[in-house]
Image 1 (cartoon, rainbow, N blue to C red):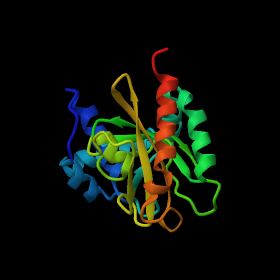
Image 2 (image 1 turned 45 degrees about the vertical axis):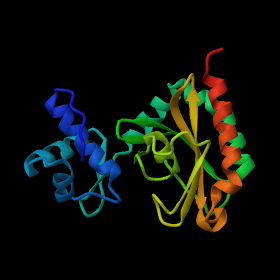
Image 3 (image 1 turned 90 degrees about the horizontal axis):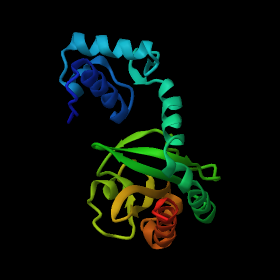
Length: 218
């Protein structure tokens, strides 16, 4: 796993442990942490336990590590403090009402994307992306936009790419020529179909343009 180096060793290693848990498909054993970070077993254990004490990690009944509930509050605080989230909310709510699907706003953070705003679909069967969730770049329509893989496309879609049975459509939020975020909808494949962009691409692109206008220079 690629790591960002700040020069503060214990902090870099602790963040590597958090990242390993965040991008894992499920709860992490100590062996999983060692494999993902390359840290010695004793170091990985010491840091994981310390992060658990601070509520940044927690453990399931089998002793495996998961993200801690303290991160929920921190993620919400960070999102609430970011002007883009507030400016984007009216367009995101309108997009959810128009499409009937869950809506997310992502920004890039290093080699990941972070869900800044998440609005759930009113349907009983829906996709749920927790606000503050860190997901890999390159997977899913929003991930491909933020990684640059989608090029200059107005929108891009994905089917079963990040999670089986889930489809999505995303569009870039570009302000003053800079890609600042990606807005997208996601939902079950059975409802969105094999070509979700044909159905919702223009609506998602319009929402992205509305967000860009809301946060752009006056």
